[in-house]
Length: 211
Image 1 (cartoon, rainbow, N blue to C red):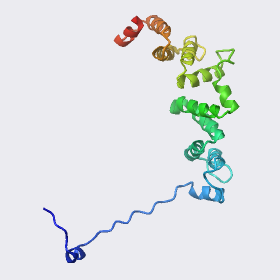
Image 2: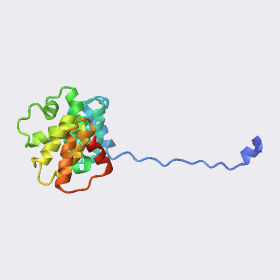
Image 3: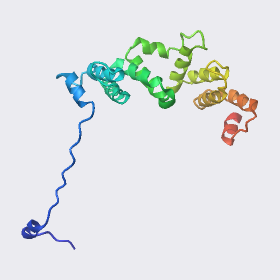
Image 4: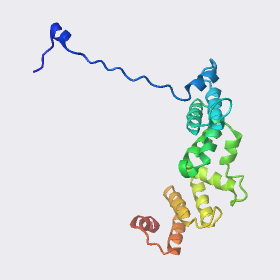
């Protein structure tokens, strides 16, 4: 059973005091401090400006995608619409790395705040040519956000070769997603694509195609 130390015993014990290592300031700290010049970082325009300067390597800032994303994300969190669009465009430059979900969510946030560019990018009703890049982006953004009609249109575009050749696998994926989100006719397209390539169906695929 443990006991309390007497004052004499305690004073005779060697007490090790650990001093934490001094943290080095982040590489962006000095630049941000100088640029802000007393402005409050809660001002939505300031982190946006900082983020864009890091993006471009301008106004005395070094170019850094890492710090650009950090500060643009901070601006997004305080409601800066321009930052939402700038960050979305940054992610869209490398969709293999970032995918389409992040930019789609940012564009929707900006559209909800009335940004006309964001509203236009999500508008599917105004598309008169489904083979264009504008159509692909609108379908893909809305599909990523859960719109079943967009999933179907995206799948059809892949199947018909509007968005590049040899995209049947992508068509299957989006037809299946459309089916799982309520488009029961999409199952027929999945079945046709599988049989066209003579690929054996899984039990789960057979189950939903029979239903």
